[in-house]
Length: 85
Image (cartoon, rainbow, N blue to C red):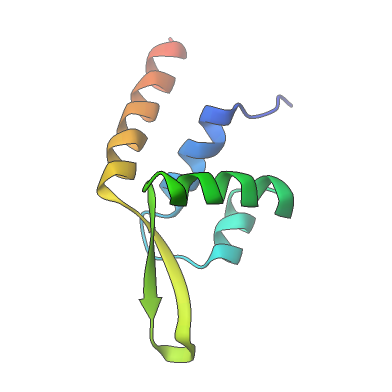
């Protein structure tokens, strides 16, 4: 089993966050440990690739891939497709 590249992890996170998702669920769906997840997560938030969405019931905060993040996701998917040929 090979390790995922940085590009693979970012692609997975942006893909999973296309619909509103909690931080914890995103971490589990991307199969990352807490420390690795937080490094990537903070970077994606800082760069505007993920956005925070206030969710009133229980005052939960959910996250979603931004338009900028969707553009990057499409590009990463295309790069992966080209490289896998």
